[in-house]
Length: 310
Image (cartoon, rainbow, N blue to C red):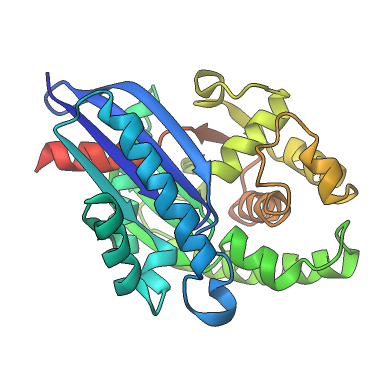
């Protein structure tokens, strides 16, 4: 059976998946991820900076080598928020092609939403009639309303943990005034999302809330005190609002260095977990959920599934 590889090139994290195709589905053979923070400084200058591009290209090269051990028929790389927004995106695309030989696909956020749906539902069991999936990234957060596992409506926001951290978190540990200002920014945006997501066919309480991407899986790992990370234990985990609030309360009192020493907190997320936790809390509070289902599956799985369907 043919083997394919996908690389999800995010604003903060690069994620690799190598999978064997079973027609319109797949079996995962190998996965890896690395935090390269491609979107570092993007919110200030509007461009991808040199060191961030170098880190990311080196990671793509490394992942290509790892994937090549499985002799894939194709390696697909999809870039999201950071590359979409960057004024120098064309330069970065050319550099990736020159360094790796791979054509970088920059997907609009609506297409990112569709592929994320494919990925998420490929990993969750059970009959989920209606849901809101939200995907917290480094440069943006997407919200997707689904019915029978198909897209009904999607709303994109600029609530990215890299951007929010750079703009609002200056003190170490986090200053209460900074946190209040951060909460207000996030609250206002999530209220806008709720207004846009209202759907006549269903009420919020009839929906299941599903969270995906690194911030949410990291919060699940922290809640489980899980180290090393185990995707099988995280995928499908039910995360409670009160536990996320407890995690934030504990982490915000720590210095960056103290957070770095928490085994279950992925290295490179010690600053980003603060705005990430606030996003999760405000989404759950404003949309009216006490719990959410965590998905370890997402865009990188959706990239492969979408290709297999075309």
